[in-house]
Length: 162
Image (cartoon, rainbow, N blue to C red; front, side, top):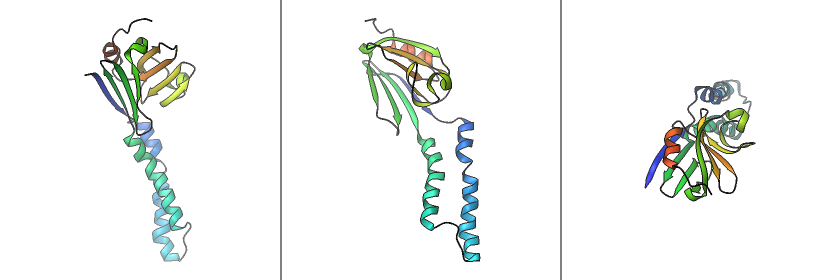
């Protein structure tokens, strides 16, 4: 049974703006290539080159649009899945020593957002500065970013201390 589910996506305005900045020069380049190139009889880049640049310039923002972090707490495990970036990670409840809702500094503590490794352990986060810090039985730490960290902590419950 699923006790908690959260689906988060990269929707920060500054990230979307940053990803869309190359679209304007690309659109102008297409105009030069397809309209002025025919008029002048010359093309600044090959059609294959234009296709490769187009896939990169338009593909990266589309790819970010579809990225999502799904966190589920089942009766026996916590499931964390960064779709389509990474395989699902399943952490058995019995392997969790502690689960605490925390406020953290994404850039300083983990180097940003995504699947990150830092001095405080590994993190799965998409936005914001809140999450649940797990301490595992093997001593490793894992931060799961959440817009609802208190609910996530409560769903994990109070794992037994090993």
